[in-house]
Amino acid sequence: MTGRDGGADLHPIGNSPVVVLVRPQLADNIGACARAMANGGLFHLRLVAPRDGWPQEKAWRNSSGADRILDAATVHDTVADAVADLHRVFATCPRPRHIVKPVLTARGAAAEMRLIAERGLSIGLLFGPERAGLDNDDMAQADALVRYPLNPAFMSLNLAQAVMVMAYEWWTAADTTPGRTLMTNETKVATKGQLENFLAHLTDQLDACGFLRNLPKRPGMVRNIRHFFQRGEVTEQELRTLHGIVTELAIGRRQRGRLEEE
Image (cartoon, rainbow, N blue to C red; front, side):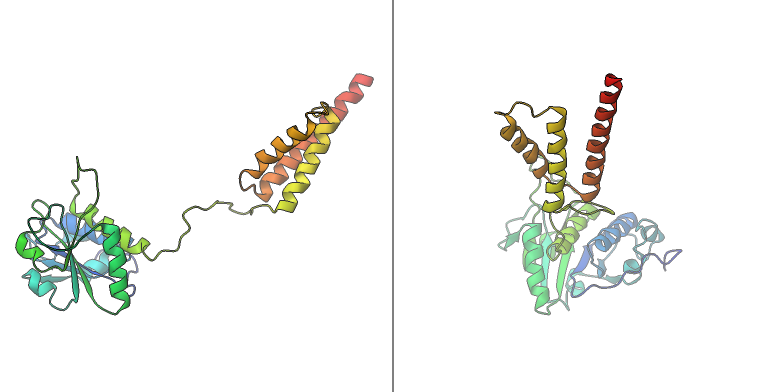
């Protein structure tokens, strides 16, 4: 079974973890999980004893184009069978039940999984049923538990949200996107020389119109104006606009002066 249009051109990216949904109850949720996986570059999906069987057309309809993940999904009778070929398994668990295992945050688990994947080992991520989560027998198949550090007064997540958190952390653990950028579109950030040229233009016209006529205060006023423009990354287009404003103000001042003289 495939989606009507085949969906997005998804494929495995490197040695990524296998997502194992244990006894999922709704096809809609399986589709939403596939969508979340695609967002984070995950591709391999395994289903353990889905309640309503498999395949289910609703999953494809709810995957928003993550059809290929669903097309390649495999079905297993038990958790043990689903993880038999994996080297390391992490189980998401909101409330560890008297189990002695390492417990990691989602971010910590993603970092550890990246290191494991770099060694060429295969990894599984277990997610429990929507209502009850994983039971003790399920978690016995895991090497470590993952617990999300959320608001302790309300830690409820649906299945797709739980998958999305891990997919996001997996992706960002290797992502090099800067934490902050300036969107400049067709222009670019002005150089210090370009900014200095504008400040000289501005200062010249402020002297000409008398704004800087208080000579004792003039150096401080000029510094304050300079600090204002040095605080952020001014673009070349913004400087061109400001140059135009100052020029037009100067022209207007000269024209008014001629009118007053007449």
